[in-house]
Length: 132
Image 1 (cartoon, rainbow, N blue to C red):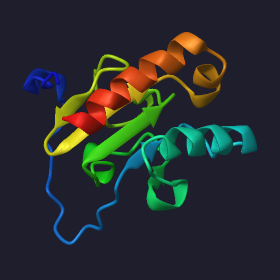
Image 2 (tube, rainbow, N blue to C red):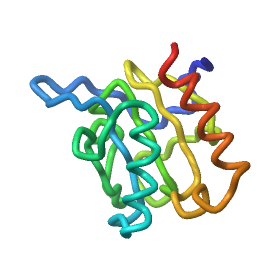
Image 3 (cartoon, rainbow, N blue to C red):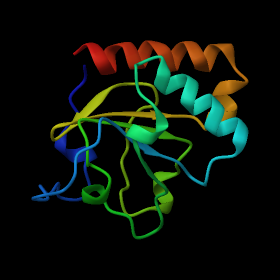
């Protein structure tokens, strides 16, 4: 699994005491449509999780990394980090580690649901994500 060099991180990483931990944090640009919720549920069930077990976050302009690094695993679907204060420069579909959190950046759920190639890339990334 690639390690994210410090020069890719443009803000400090903070440890927040007494912050609840979730099996996974999922970043989304907007509230889920019915189709998006069904597809996300399918993705999560493939790794024995349910949406109800995950923390869904919809980053805004002022959202910082410390507000989303609440788990050991973070999946981001279709989030434009240039529109947030997070400003990560992570290659898509690669598992990288930021602090104690493994991160995958992926395309929007709708795009993935409509592309066999993107589904394969996501699945390959998630196998690394959960096996290391």
